[in-house]
Every structure is written in structure tokens, then in C-alpha cells.
Length: 153
Image 1 (cartoon, rainbow, N blue to C red):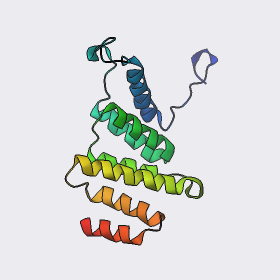
Image 2: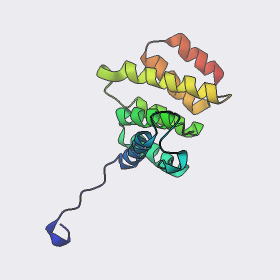
Image 3: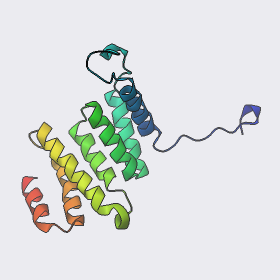
């Protein structure tokens, strides 16, 4: 208990991710609906800093919440925020932190989508991301794809 008889709630394990997601949602809501009128870019809420993005990714990774990890990724991607390859690998691994029986295939496909986007943006997606993608292919029962990724690493 704290002063005034009120208890202070502990911060959510994904609070950093929630802040970045909320910041991006406010930015999306502030965008003008058309090209011709409305707010200009300087009136929009700022993009998150690299440090805020990294903290958000670390928070979803530590709390093992694949759903929030996916929401964070999609929100950052929609906003055009560039995420460093090592952070993409951490985020992809967090996607796989779901109930495998219910959402395992969906999570694996999300990892493979992230790999495809990373390949479009970078000449080499990096060993860490290839390892996560290999796990995704393995969970989908695709041994040939695992071998293909292993040869890239």
C-alpha cells in the first residue's frame, strides 16, 4: 500500500510494446484521410525511437506473448519503422511463443512472412533469423525448407 491508501499497479510485462503500439495507433488516427487536406507530417505524433522499439521487442520476447509480438511487428511495419535485423530475429522468435496446438501454424507462417520481408530489405537476413525460420519450417513439417535455410546460413 502506498500513501493515500491506494495501491500502485505493477507495470505490465509488455508495457513497452503497448506504449509503442499505442503511439503508432495515435499516429495512424492523426493521418489525413486523403492526400489533399488535413494535418501535415509535422503535426503527426513522432515515430518511436530505436531505443523504444528495442525495448518493446525485448518486452514481448521476455513475456513470451506471440500475439502481442505480431501486433507490434505489424504496427511498426505499417508505420514504415525500420527494425534492425537482430531485433527482427528476436521478434520472429517471439511470434512462436503461442499455444502450439491452437496457433502454431499461424505463428510459423508469420515468421516466414517476416523472413520474406527481411529478404526484400536486406541482402542477407542473418543467421539468427534463418534459425528462427528453420524452427518455423520444422513446426510445419517442411524438412526440405529447413535444409534449404541451413545451406544459406
